[in-house]
Image (cartoon, rainbow, N blue to C red; front, side, top):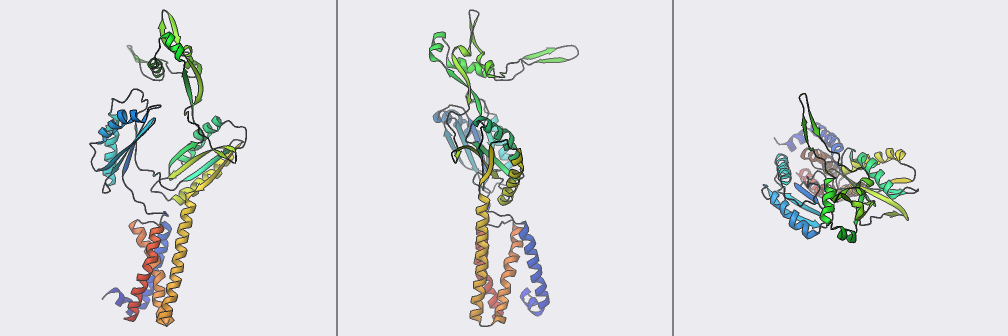
Length: 415
């Protein structure tokens, strides 16, 4: 005996079964995440390298080729693409879609080991390339937060406060995958403006200056003093602490006279980037942050947490800074989902009217009319079981499936 026959012969059982399906669907609906589109997790890896001032051709020839060679031995690689610009090089690797989590973790570890094993990078590369996974998606929903300088705060002070005090707080919010910025400013850096005439007169090359700066910006152990009871490590103090220490760095000693960096260059405290980064809001100086959620998190929930964090940080802001979320993509997602549900209700109402009109009897039409909400609400339990999310495509599928539900219900009624 099939289920339709059982339900026809035992209407009370059919009613209880329908109520159970509705309750299960309502409980599952509370657990479904909200997305704009279904999450398609393509395993990817990104390797980033930076050399300040290097041309795109130099990065391609001396960095990109080495990164590609390091990644050549990886399995399950679908495509590899490099993007070399002035001062930076990025290698993006797309793995096959059938790579599981365990295999993806092993591939990432192997890639990191291969990149760390490269020893012939240009000497001007001070930091090793970084390897990142796809834990956070740059194309996911984001929130843009602006900071407007309404007082007499300097741009550099504002940048330092945002990057040192506020950015770490946003990164510690549950579900946040990345925080980009601050945009509209730059971190501080010591600028050494060389004097070609003085360098030529003292026979000093640019490489000598670079070598001097590099040697005084490294930390190493010079040796060990071995005693009877214990050993002592020799750690020379060669770190510069302020701009005056940079000016007094010795490049060379000629005939007992030291040639210092200040003799052949002007040393000033400036910005790390020479490209101006300016942002204004209503003709007032401003900066911005971009907060991105993790791919596995609900962007609407993460946006609510970010709003709560902003409200808590407001009291900590110094005088002269206003913080406000100016763009929240979760609002667009919620509006799209609400419009989808409105369309779903309209479709149910119109289909019910058409069924009543053509069947000519409200009693006969009550079967397919009751079937529609039972099936629509019950499908949320199936979606939760399969790991689906509420998005525009799943809502569209439910709307289209109403026709199938009504068609089958009418066939049952006629039989």
